[in-house]
Each structure stands twice: as structure tokens, then as C-alpha cells.
Image 1 (tube, one colour):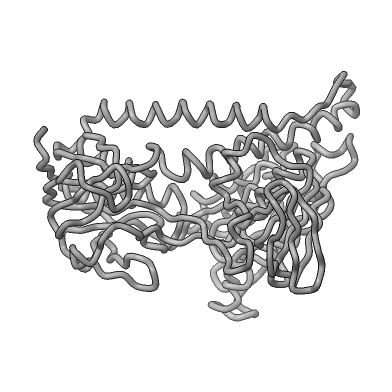
Image 2: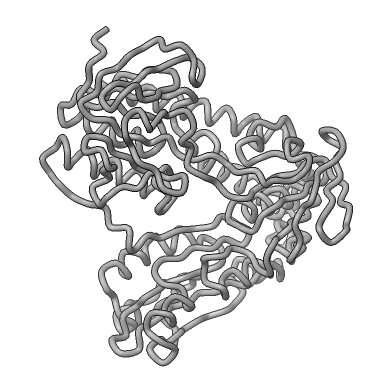
Length: 453
């Protein structure tokens, strides 16, 4: 096999796959190197299987509320083992599908762990750092190996699970401790609680979801507590003791929490281990690969996309970065990714979605007198008959002088679906008047965005 390529991509995650297929479409000879399964974090151990677990965790509550609509299920029995097995089967299908897509695109898939020999040669081995089975010559290299979960420095940390491990479990235990306050911690706390697991969530600070609009984070916190998650703030684990399935978490407040498992959702970092970046002269900064607006590293023919750059660690961003790179280098259609306005969502329960500036960031940029806030807080019609469930919050952050919408935010059912469409308007520079003259679809949750006083 010819081992010389126009482009060698390290990592078959979202960004790497997008770049490889787009570059091949432009006529480049492309190889993609992956030591794990094809699909990356999102498909294999992140967004996709997690969202399926979210759906599964909501079923029992829907069944409990069904009687208010005149439907009386005969049995509600949660079987997390069956759910996890079904999710893994779907991941297997998607993995196979992505391999097929690469073949159809004419991309050569090389299974193994890649590392630099020098700036134009990649060694690929079966095991990380092992003897190479392939030596690839690359005119250009794209690094898209993603990130990995971090573990805190505490005694017994090896007894805990990270998010990757959750999808490999045979079933969920009856009691779990979740450590963390970010989106992964909040999402899994909701999943587990919805599946009947008794959840204690340890939060180092005084609030959840740092970096998101504080009011929205507070509504999520309120809803999680209402659904039974035991939130313990200003509390950190000091140690994990016991044996798998029978653990005790000791906290810095002197508490001992017995559980069947511990999820350490304490952040992620770029996965640079084993790449041998020094051999190619690729610079790093604080354990990430810095790049310019064209995804180029300090080495002119080596590029990086996605989580290894540690800018905005979201799947759609990595995909667009990969495609922009391929279009610019191989398609003679130069373009750069706009990282300024990126919508994001937390599939917590209740769900949060947002685009643009938070209230806090808007005030920081424009001053308290330069910002106007509009909000609506209510219980959605879906909860009118069950007469329970968290209330929605819809929020617009407006620049006072121009009435331009700086931020559009929501907590509640279908928040991500709604904000996806709102992001188009915000990106086009819509004003409050533009929202106001848009006729409402009634009765819907989203109509509140165009009827706020």
C-alpha cells in the first residue's frame, strides 16, 4: 500500500472525520488514523449515547404522568441493563456507519495509534507507543484527537468512574455520588435520578454550571432538586474507599456517603499524550495546541481542530473547523470559522439552551444601564394536567441603545430545539422589535420569546 498522502488526519472524531471526507471530496489523498472506535467522543461515549440515556430516563416520569391524560400503564419497571445494552447496540451501528462513510469518500482508514516521527512522517502502532506497523508520509497533518476526562487528585480515585465508563456499565447501581458542577455532572445526575438511582451530587462551589447565565443555572438547580437530586454545595470528596459496588465517599465536611458507584465529572483536557509533538516541533500551551484562525499550528503544514485546541469544545464547532480547513487548503475556498456566536445546550433535567451573551457578560461589556432584560417564567401547558414539574424560563438580553438582541436563553422542555432556531435571528442582528413583530405560534412555549412586554 502506498503510504504517501496529501493529508494524514490523527483522530477519527467529529472534526477529523469532517475534514477527511471534505478533503477527499476536493481530490486529496487522505488517510485517517484512529486507535479507538471511529466516531470520536460524540458518537461513541458522549453526545449521542448520553442523549439516548436522557430520553430513557424521562420515560418513567412520562408514564407516571400518563394517568392525568387518561392513560393507565399496567406496569412501570426500569431496567437500566436493557437500556444500556440498547444504547451500545446503537453506538455499534453508528460506528459501522462512519467507517462505511469513510470508505465511500475514498479515505483510507488506518487502525492504530499515531505519533509524529518528524513533521512530515507519522508512525502508527497497535498499542500507544508500541512498535510501528505503518510509516505514513504526509504533505499536511491535521490533529483532531479530542480530549479525555480528568480525575481529581484524591485517595482512591481509581475506584471512581469517568463519563466514558458510564456507557460500559452492565447496569446502574441503586445509589451514586456524582462529583462536579458542569454540564456532564448535571446531565448524568438527571439521567440517573430519572432511572430511579438515588443521586448525591457534590459541588465544590456554591452554584452549578459556571460560565452559563446565573439565573438560568439557578432554574436548572431548582428543577434538579425538585426531581430528587441531593445537591451538596461547597463540598468536595477527599477520598473514595471500599470495593467496587460497595463504596464510601468521605467529604471535606466530614460526611461519609455510602454508594454503589462514583462518577467523577470534573472536567476534560486535550489528549496530547503519545503524539510526540516535540518531534514535529509543534508547540503546546497549557496542555493544548494553540492555532490561528486558519487552524494552523506554529508548524505551517500541521493543523489542529476540535477539543485539542481547547477553545470551544463542542461537536458542531469541531465539524465546522474541519470543513473550513479542508475547503481552505484543498478546495480553493478559503474561509474561517466564526467562534463569536455559538449556541450551546445542557441536556440536564430541566434542559438549558443559550446563544449570545449572558446577563452577566452583557452588563460587563455594556454596563448595567446599557442592558435591558426581558423574561417570562411559567409552567408549560404540558404540565397543566399533571400539575407538577419545573417552570420554564425564557430570557432575552437586549442592548438598550440599539435594542439588538445580545442573548437568547431558555430553561425548559425542547429548549435546545427552540434556541437552535433563535440563534439564526441573533446571528443576523435581530432587534427586540424584530422579535415583537413576529407572529406567535399558539399555544407553544417558544411564543413567549415574541410576546414579552
